[in-house]
Amino acid sequence: MEISLHDNWIYAHQVDHDSGVIALRTVFPHTEPHEFTDVIFEGLLAHHFQNQCMGLGGPYPLNVLFDIEEGNARTTLDLYRVLFSPRKTTVGLPAAGTRSRNWLSS
Image 1: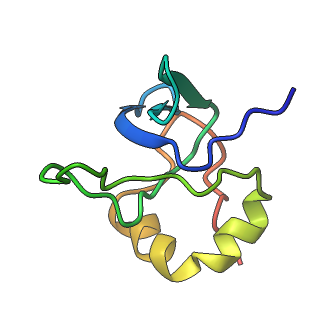
Image 2: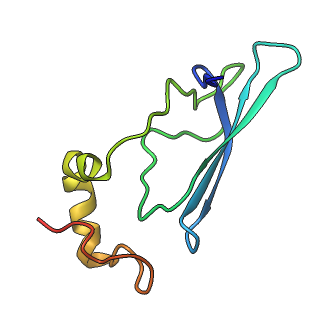
């Protein structure tokens, strides 16, 4: 059975930088009882949250999921090269002693 996360609200997330794991804590509040779903990403070299908001959402949340999909690492790096490139030299992604440092080679 495929789980839909469409219109789930992200109420929290955890980032474990040392292990390369991110957990999104989500809820679909439009049913009784509410449906809680945790989404776990493992083996990450880097991450970037775009358009995340905190607090003051009123009766509606600020972080609503449309979809989560699996993608190809090379395609992601190509699409977001401008975002990741400066970090390659300034922060040394990925961390020393973890995975291959050739993650952003041309």
